[in-house]
Length: 129
Ligand code: SF4
Image 1: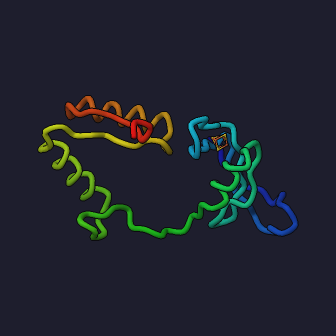
Image 2: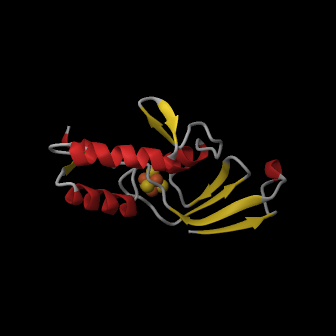
């Protein structure tokens, strides 16, 4: 993914935009990875090569920080604290289940499989329901 800045924007966005080349859409299983995005400081305002669903998905994402990095028992926590607690939970579990991954990039899925193997767990996706 390549990011550049440009003032070449549609008339309704007369401000400097960040251009992201080769962005990956994880809305559906196609995981298109050739999407071009243009964003102002907090919102994606234009997509190229995304289908109708992908365009809607991208345009509803913002760069606003709506949530803390992590939660532990519903309380905001740092990333490092959350990783430590997650590792303790996985280590003490009898049969950890790594589940979901439908909106996850190939790289993240690869890490999830590695983690499941490391902790002697199993992996499944939402398609088994
Ligand atoms: S751009 Fe469309 S087809 Fe491609 S991953 Fe996103 S939703 Fe799926």
